[in-house]
Length: 165
Image 1 (tube, rainbow, N blue to C red):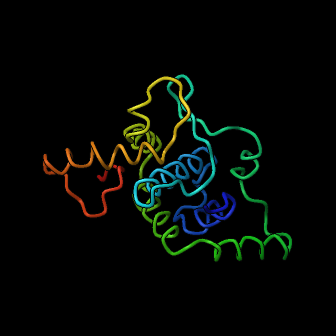
Image 2 (image 1 turned 120 degrees about the vertical axis):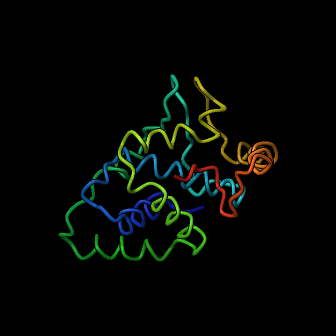
């Protein structure tokens, strides 16, 4: 399982329009990475316990808020080196998943991006309030939903449960 700080550092590093990468967008991109990882690998990429509260996706608050905050200026060599070496701690598969999430979402305006999030299977399947077990939901998705999508002609080799536009 990847450390959240490494995932966020890599997303910030690879995101094409760094000025427009808000903490809210970053949180939702981590959700997409967790969801794609669950589909492809059977487990989330991070250890975030995702929840839906009153129909809204919400990571637990705790210490995660500091992780998602805007990065500090590179005022110290130590901070810079921590971020640089954090990028190297992700596996090539984790990097591919994050790259896919960025490529699938970076050019979407906020409304389109939120629509992408709320069209994923975990959000559709759990409308009100629930803790999301992305690993088991991915199993159900792969077993039940994906074959139906393939049957109606929605067949993409890289299908990950993220709508492509």
